[in-house]
Every structure is written in structure tokens, then in C-alpha cells.
Image 1 (cartoon, rainbow, N blue to C red):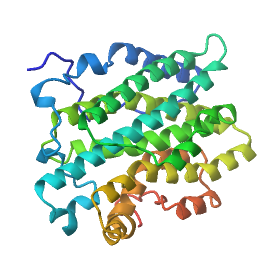
Image 2 (tube, rainbow, N blue to C red):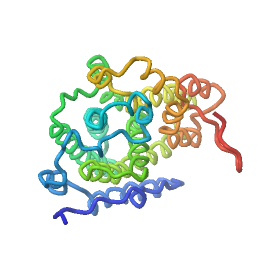
Image 3 (cartoon, helix red, strand yellow):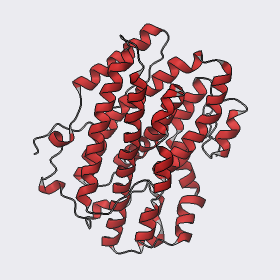
Length: 335
């Protein structure tokens, strides 16, 4: 038994999306999310027993082996490695995902504060944005502490990409709607993967599982806020701005999904994974392409709901490899 707050389950913590039919309903949703952040939240250095023997990070622990959600895990090249090397590859993958996650959340926090800076007195969004910023700060500490305890030289985003990403915090000064598309582009793919990992029936390292459960619970509120914000704002945008947002959104989502789910180059070099294996697993494998599409499915459905997908913008979704037509009753979705 550990002296810590129980991490939430991966199913009961999901915030339900609600139809926002009026300004008062939208305000009530934001106030509910703010109250939820007060009633149920976690702090990394209080609620995670980092130094408990069961939570210590052993790079050769077999529980770090790649899960089924990562296509490399089933490839003969990976299965042919020693158990110790398979574990190290899996740990590197987890640690890199957390490093990229904290880098994304650093950009997100700065963007949220730029957005909040201009909010008027009495705005319900102001309080929630600060709740979210605080929670994202806790996530960053949680992720970095995990990375530190692996002892691995994890970099996260490649240098050039990290430099380009520095424009993200300024997006709210141009378009708050585009900024919250960016938010969903980073949060939905990781949420999708973490939920799949927790449901795969494997034994997970307790530190990784606790971090994932905390992250899923609090990110559910952040995702819910972004979705409600877009539902409230996008239908009221002028037609030309809505068309522009509809054209840019699939580009942002397609790029973000690949950043979040792509194999880290440093891992490929470190473990000398053959280029042919990388291409086969992550580029040519239909399952890998489906993972990318599925990771943005909820945001794609939202974009359709709020009028961002039409005959023109649908072409961009297809070009970015993230389009999938809505499923007809009783019929499988087209590939």
C-alpha cells in the first residue's frame, strides 16, 4: 500500500462532451470544469511515491517492452533483440514521449497565458485557463522527473523542429480558434495512445501507469475545454475565416499527430534500427497509418460538426493522410 491519492481509471475519468446551445450553457460548462480542477487534481511530488522500491526505474525491466500500439514491438527485428535490449528500447520510447509531451505543454502554457492576458474582467475562461496552466506545469515536472530517473540522454523534439515550434505560443494573438486546434493536435494523439496502452491487458510498470492515469484524467478536462471553446466560437466566425481555419486545421493536426507518434530519431540511431525496418513499420504498414488517422478521430469529428470540413478542405485532410469518412450504420469505415 502506498500513501498516495489513487490514480483514476482510464474510463471513468473522461469528460463528456456537451452540446453548447447558448452562452449561459457554455459558461456553465467552463465553471464546471474549473470546479472539477479544484475537486480532483494531483501533484507530482505529493501523489507519486518516486522513491518506493516498486516505482524505481530499472532499464532492463521487461515491463518496458514496446506495447502492441507501437508497430515496432511485433517486428521480427525487435523480437530478435535480447530481452534487455527490448526493454531499453521500450523505455527510451516512453521517455521520449514524455519529453516531447512536456515540451509541447511548455508551448501550450505560454500560449494559454498569452490568451488569458487579454481576457476581460469576469471572463469564465480566465479562471479555467489558469487551472489548466497549473495542471500542465505539474505534468511537465512529472514527465521530466521520469526522464531524469531513466538516466538516458533523452532530447525530445529535434532541434530544428523545436525552433519552429517557438511560434506556437503566439498563435492566440492571431487566432484563438487555431490555437485550440493546435491544443487538440497535441493532446488527442497522446490521450488516444495512453488509453490504448492501459487497455492492452499487459503488466505495466507502476510508475508509468500512475503517470498515464493522472495525465489522462486531467487532460480530459483540457480537451473538453478546447472542444467546447471551438463549438462556441467557430460557428460564429465569418465565412472566409472559417474556410481558412478549415484549410489550416488538417495541416496542423497531421503534423502534430506525426510529431507525437513518430519514432524518435535518436532512438533509431542509438539502437541501430535498420532504415528498412523503420520504413516498413512506420511508413508502409497500414496499421501505422491507421494509428495516425485514429489518433485524430475525435478532433476530425468535431471539425465536421462545427463546419470546418467541406469538399475543399476534405482534400487537405486526405493529403495529410488523416481523413476517414464517417461510418454509416452497420458498415465499416472506408480505408
